[in-house]
Image 1 (cartoon, rainbow, N blue to C red):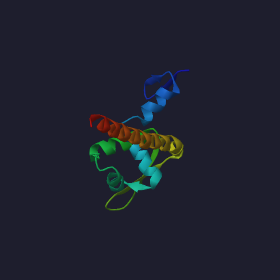
Image 2 (cartoon, rainbow, N blue to C red):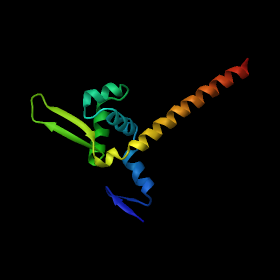
Image 3 (cartoon, helix red, strand yellow):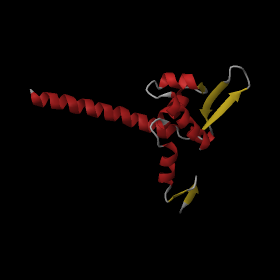
Image 4 (cartoon, one colour):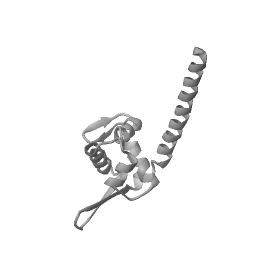
Length: 122
């Protein structure tokens, strides 16, 4: 069954899901908001020091557009903006947890592989 979204046609729900949460920093942003919520931009940057602010804002806007996160702007000076997971974003918790667990397992696998290779060189 075809799905139309953002002027694109998706033939499977997997393609649709990956188009929404795919992106260099999106899973990491979702992970941050699962750890603590709501968060301000500067707080997210502390969790993700390798991302530049322009890219972070871009990824946040895309996640907001897809209703994964909600952006709250408070009418104060200086402006205060907070982000938190929306209803559909909260459903990503088991997905993000599984990806993080897999990452831990893969890191251990790589470390074992490196140690194995070092022993073979001796």
